[in-house]
Image (cartoon, rainbow over all chains, first blue to last red):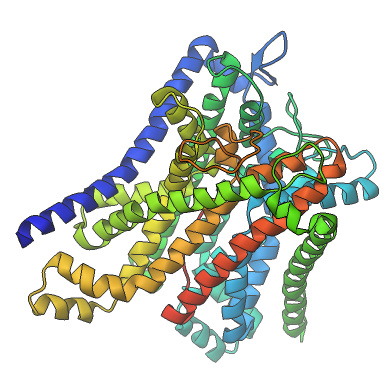
Length: 300
Length: 286
């Protein structure tokens, strides 16, 4: 009797684990099949190389580049703000601050990264955009700059948290050795600790970049819409994620070609974030699974 | 001398980055509170959708969000915990375990908006139904599944191996050990992970929007198959109203939303601190 119970429980737990595979398979199947249907009507060179995205104009053009460049523009601007700030804060907290302070700030960072993104979208549209309009002439009401700045602010706690985690993994003996040789805190931090934590820091950058590319609500609220490749942050842009929101909030029939575009766009976003996350985890796994001095000797 | 100046400059730069970030956030929250002020009253909580901003309230969407939180956790917790237990206690290290692990990592990194597309297809093509409470909760439960699995595995790993060994040595079977030794020991940090997941469900907007969650529903859901508008979706709708009159409603609803997510996260942090003496957890990627 006991044995049968054990077997049933093991089978149930196994099914739970299988379900996670089913989710991934289901997702790829849905995005893949619907994208294949889409590519029957739209040729793929037109999709990847055309520079206009006008699925609802009389002359319909389906070029993904404007959406892709929009996502990239906002993500890059946000990262330009978040990476230097987050990196310095993490180095400060990990190498300079007292341990008690570090624990407090760790909780604060985690709390801040849990704020719903729709809240940040509100900040961008109602506070940052009006402020920027006052100080930057020629700024449009919907623009890439305001959501990018707020996304940067949103990413700072998240990125700091990941960086700090990477720095904390560096063994304390490295720091002690460095101090013993007469280095001060700054030299120890940047010549010893940061290089040793490099894989974890690259991981933090890639994962944050993936999150910035996939971030939806801030841009959907404050970035507006566009049809061509727009690299001026003062103008409105459309991103991969906001396009999907705009279409599904509209009233297109579900089976129209216009609606099917969201699957092709979603598939591109899926592949891109999947690519970034995979590289990130590969680097982390490949370079941090072994102790640093071991990899030093095996690589020589 | 030069290096001491550099040291000082770095300190000043880092502290001002930290200070500025916090200052900006504080200003933004005060701004939100100020914007919300005219709407903060009891009737905002009890009224439902209305075209007049002063009469519009969040009752229906707030109730819908509570339903979503409860339903999706009911779905995600047994499955996520089960999968976590399987991976931690039953799975041998081989190719299959590597696939499972890589898969969880991948799922955790998929933007929430993509989960909405999966949900949309499930609802329209497979179940031919409308966008109902069950459908929304199901998709949100899939979204938080990876973080629950990761948290389960970490909680299990925090259990001292000697306890497990003692239980096995006394003749307990595998499941008996899990049920009577490991689960009670790991319970609090499991709860901490679940609380975080509930907060995430409450604040998620994008998948619900993709699935058609933006509808004008003037009643609170009372049934699993009722249509609904969740609180964050209601906020999104008010933010994008062409007239600025609704901004006060959006701000007030944001404060209510934060009154749900912030205490849940604080409680989660608190529990984890008690359990592990301030150890770190994994952040969800979404």
